[in-house]
Image (tube, rainbow, N blue to C red; front, top):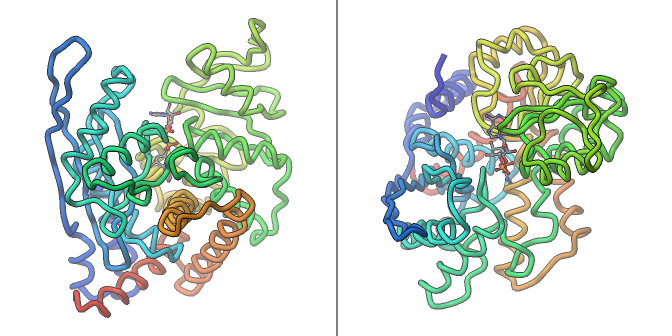
Length: 424
Ligand code: NAD
C-alpha cells in the first residue's frame, strides 16, 4: 500500500491506460508534469522573526487550456501530494469538458498557527514567488484545503499590483465583492449532489431517507452535508480533524446547526448542543475511523486523501461512496470495494462542480459580467449530469469501474488535444 498520493495517481493512470491500450508516449507525457515550481517564501512573523515556508506550484498539463487548480495550506503538504492533485485536475477538467489543463499549489504550513497578518503576508509571498508563471491565460489558482475566499482576495490583489492592472480572472474562489461568482462557495457540494441524484436515478434507488456519513466539515463536507440534509437525506454522522459526532437515533442532523455549535465550541465532536444544553444521550462522539465503518447507505469522504485504504476498505458498510475529497480512496481499496460491489463515484467526477464553478467565475471576469445564482446553477447542473452520463456510459462500454470510466473519458480528450497541438 502506498501513502504517496502521486504513486496512487500513477497507478490509476496505468490501470486506465491498460484498458484502452493507450499510446505509451501519452502515458509518459501524463506521468510528467510540464513544470514544477518549488520556492522558499520568507514571511515576517508578528514577533519580528523571519520564517521561510516551502511553497509549490505544479503545472501538470495545459494541452486543453490554462493550468487550473487550488492551493492547499497544510502541515503535511509536500511535492508528491501537489503533483498528484495537479494530475487529478488535468483529468477532472477534461472529464467535465471545461477548457482547462491541470495544476495545483501548496504551502507546507499549519495555517491555524498563523495570525491573519502572517497569513496575508504568506499568501502575498506565494504570489510574488510564482507571479511570472500565473495569469488568466496561463495558470489560474483557486482555494483548496485551509485556503479561503479572503486568501484569494489577497492573492488577486497582489497579482494585480505586480501586473499593474486589476486582474480578477487570475484567481477564482474570490469573495463576490472582488469579482467572485454567485454559487462558487458551494459549487463543489452542489455538483456532488447533482451527481449523486443522477446515480441513484440510474440505480433506481429512492434517495429520500437514505442515511449518510460525511468525513470532513469544511467547504466541501459542510455544503455537501447541508444540501443532502435539505433534500431529505438523513445525515447521521459528521466529522472534522478532531473527530466526529454520531446521531444514535439515525434521524439526521442539521449541518447548519452543527456548524453553529462548532463555531461556538471549536469542534464538532461529543454532543449535539442547543445553546448550553447538550444532548449526550442521543449523540455520541466517534473517531474518523469509526465514521468510515458506519452502517450507512452513503459514505462521503470530504477531508483528505488516503481515507479509505487497503486496511479499512473491508470494514466499509456503505453501498455507495461519493468521493468528494481528492484521492480519498487508494487504488488498493478501490479493488477491494469493486469486488464487494460497493459503488465509488470517483473524485474526478464527484467534486468537479468546484472547478466548473471556478470556470464560470473566470468566464464572467473575462467578460466583465456577473451572473445570478440561478444562471450559475442552470449551467452547473447540465454540465454535471452530462458528465455523469458520459462517465457511466464509458464505464459500461469497457465494463470497468466509474473511476476507470472517468479516466478513459478524460484521457481521450487530453490525448486528442495533445495530438492536435503536436505534443505527441
Ligand atoms: P477545507 O479546508 O474547507 O475543509 C477541510 C475539512 O477537513 C475541515 O473540516 C477539517 O477539519 C477536515 N479535516 C482535516 N483533516 C482531517 C482528518 N484527518 N480527518 C477528518 N477531517 C479532517 O477544505 P475543502 O475545500 O473542503 O477540501 C476538502 C477536500 O475536497 C480536499 O480533498 C480538496 O482537495 C477537495 N476539493 C475541494 C474543492 C473546493 O472547491 N474547495 C473542490 C474540489 C475538491
